[in-house]
Image (cartoon, rainbow, N blue to C red):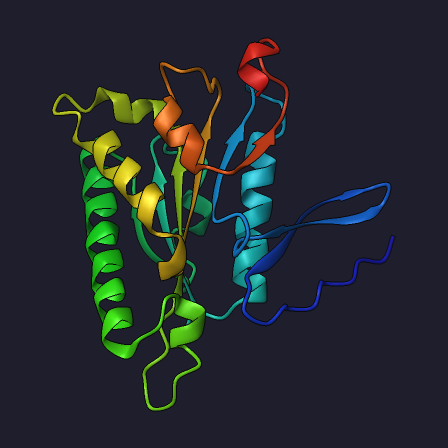
Length: 208
């Protein structure tokens, strides 16, 4: 089957994530800025994650998009560590925590800039004349459950803050886990992650 790459949509980041009987399945990050990808081992979660990253780096250039990778499993995302889009690749709980903190600081800086220019989103800001366009940013955290190993509980607290506020700044977040139960992803996080890509789970309770 001949594949035709989707056309880019203005004021949006829209990427293909699969094919259905009705045609291409597209993920619009401007509408669904936060996504978690869940599924048991061997269910297709890793293939999906790599497909999303491949779409991002082929459809957008390094001057348009930055990718930040937190690979707590150390084996899933290292294929993308050396692409030009990748600004940071980390794999320990401590380093992922610092990465999240840095992106939270950057998000707050962007909102200060938006206030100074009287705009409300990265799309509006990048249309202004005489400003340096801000890059879109994508954060992937592979196996979020490992952030619970942070003894200071700082990692999840920072991630909750980032997920809650980062949408308009141009930062889009993907988190993955094998088991999306409440002891892994609590209700606060679930409420702010409005998109779910679900593969085979242990039971029906963990699939929603």
